[in-house]
Amino acid sequence: MPAPLTVAAVEALRAQTPGTQHITHFNHAGSSLPSTATLEAIREHLWREATQGPMEAGVTARQQTEQARTLAARLLNAQPSEIAVTTGNSSAWGGAFAALGAWRPGDRILVARHEWGGNLATMRLTAQRAGASIETIPSDDSGAVDPQALEAMLDERVRLIALTWMPANGGLINPAADIGQIARRHGIAYFIDGAQSVGQLPVDVQQIGCDVLTTVGRKALRGPRGTGLLYVRQDFLPQLTPAFVDTHSAPLDASGEPILRADAARLEPSELAPALRCGLANALQEALDIGLDHIRARIDTIAQTLRAELAQIDGVTVLDQGRERSGLVAFNLAGHEPAAVQRALAAQGISIGSNGVAYTPLDMTARGLDTIARASVSYLTTEAEIDRLLEHLRALRR
Image (tube, rainbow, N blue to C red; front, side, top):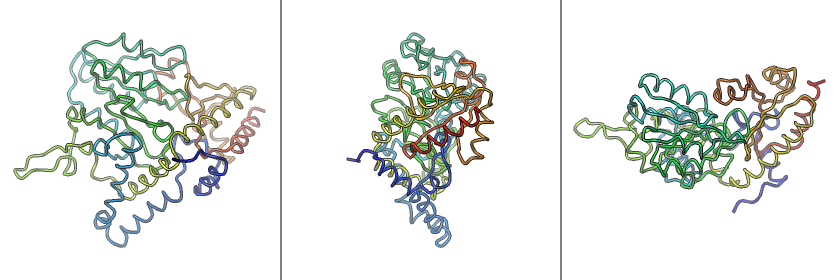
């Protein structure tokens, strides 16, 4: 059983993370800081490619690269056959959505107000061509998606419920399992965008009840950019026919006919860099070794501290909604555009995010927000780093 994250344990993890020695990082929701071991796993495979030849090195490292699938299955409480390793969250989500096949006039897609802009763009293009509709599920008084309101919207034309579990523009955590119970009861496909969730929260796809869940390696998992994961429930897989295939996802049989794979790898690209898969496998193992319960507890404590301290600064408005909150902390500083705050902090070696309407258009528009500043924490974040961020924000305010 992993041990809780004590101050000493966090310092040991920071010592194994070179980025913590060079930057005060509050943009873990954009991309977190990889460990030395993750970087070394990537480097070792690149060296194999240079000395053995890239194709030969891929054969040598096949067991290591396949470990990413096995470890992801452990992390999500899934079977390895239900996991595809992808190039990122958007490619995974978009590939699964495209695999749903043709849409008909009158088909309905229901989304929470917090849906990621890229997913909305994909759905809107499809809906416009087919005559389908996209409708927003009301939120409750906390700002989270309202399961009761969802149930009242359902009829036989609803073909998909899509949920961004943790939105990019703040700390809200949507009730994914409550939505899953409704989707399963009515037999409606249920997609979760877990880009911000996996690696930050314990995730059990069996308990959640989703058909599809996607995530990315570079955020809370601290893996390399250019990696992602796609979970597809085994019983749902026959409903997905990829928009395109290759000899990995649908090898030809003796008569030259393509045979779709019987596992989630039917939605997996063949051209995913093995070096990045090695790095992803190491990052997944590190998350499992630390323990997701301990990661969640540490992040929650740090984020609550940051929110409370930000609220004490004159001119700062904390914008997070939800009864349960994540490590993403949204705020605005009166008299300063978020992008300008981001630039000013970057000049001092402090990184934060700055999000516009395009990231979460339905929610930003509903709340009358044009842009927000976002400080996102990790289990690596220390109180000294919080103090440094607050000091520079106070200086900006003055």
